[in-house]
Image (tube, rainbow, N blue to C red; front, side, top):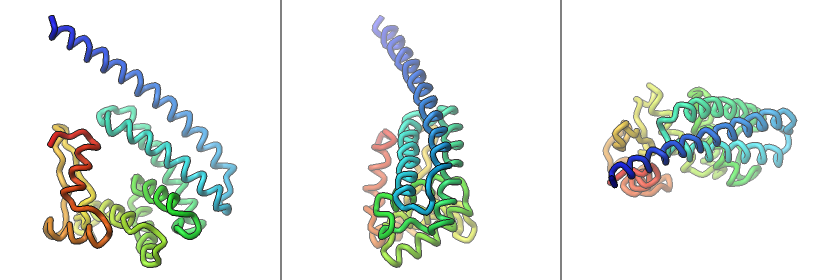
Amino acid sequence: MNKICMLIFFTLLYQVDLVFACHRIDEFKTRLTIEQINFLSSDLNDVTSIQATISSIYQLDQELRTIYIHDRNNNEVKTFMLEMDQFHTQKMKEIIRNHGWPTITLFGKNTDHQAWLLVQHSSDLEFQKNCLQLLYQAMQCKETNPINYAYLYDRVALQSKEYDYKQKYGTQFHITNNGELILQPYQGTIEDIDKNRFLIGLSSLEEYTTCIKKMYKILP
């Protein structure tokens, strides 16, 4: 009897989660539409306007990805996330085309971080490669957080022949359908990875792996 009750409970809980996820997707679609309308009237020559735009699309990105982390098999979430990322990439292209990388001095640390994350989530490899060069230049002038460069480097490297499809800083993992966490291909040894991470200001690979497991609720 207890097993039947438990089965009914988890079935109902699953159904509630589905309804909640569908409701949030509708909310996100509305917010994306508002973004698309608002951006038409935003001033790409005004720093404050750009900061507000980047902050708005960053918030939507993070909220949706929080849902995705806990519901990675939800096709509706995946489909909308792709649509959202395409729009955000388009907006970031326009901003960067006008201003170059949003530097810390001109736009502030928050906008620098938010802009990097939006580029990190883009599916446009050539755009990411261009931004990687901009981040490298900004890093030399202390106009971006070096960690931004490390994460985007790994994302680009894993998709690029010129980098031998290998990451350098160990920031990128793959999660299997069985919930197993796998470090994607990397240059050298784990010791090399840790040296690279230390030089750029990242924690050890072991500490980072622990954080990833907690974030995705993966058992040790």
